[in-house]
Image (cartoon, rainbow, N blue to C red; front, side):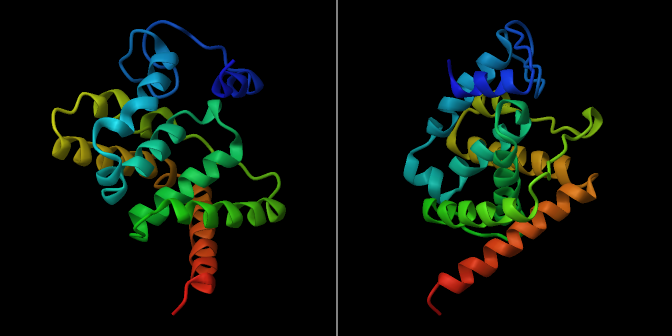
Length: 186
């Protein structure tokens, strides 16, 4: 059984196999299963090198994860919201090496906030773009533009109308920047 199905069961989410994705609302024929399958290949629409340079690899993962919080562990949601904040708000050029630092920050953070949860945006404020929209892009430029817009919409959906989510993202980003500054040679 894939991990996402295990997490869905843990969150008591009954998987619907037909129609739109029940979590993000994307226009699929086979529901969340098709949505997850598309997410698994979406980062390969452009080369890995260009995906890292344009940050689309990270933005796709974060946006999709946050639109599907019930198939991930709750601390996963903290990670993805914080990374979106760092890329979109603080303009950090993300690399795989920075992921390790953010994971360390999150491990420390969990000890201080053991019961904290990211709350889902209400349906009115959910992002309109989904992985299916991004997958329908026709060329590299359109793909990059759609990924960035998708990530922005998802980030705003979680933070603009929820001060608690915004504060969580800000605290984690601030801790990350402080830790990163401490280990980065000046």
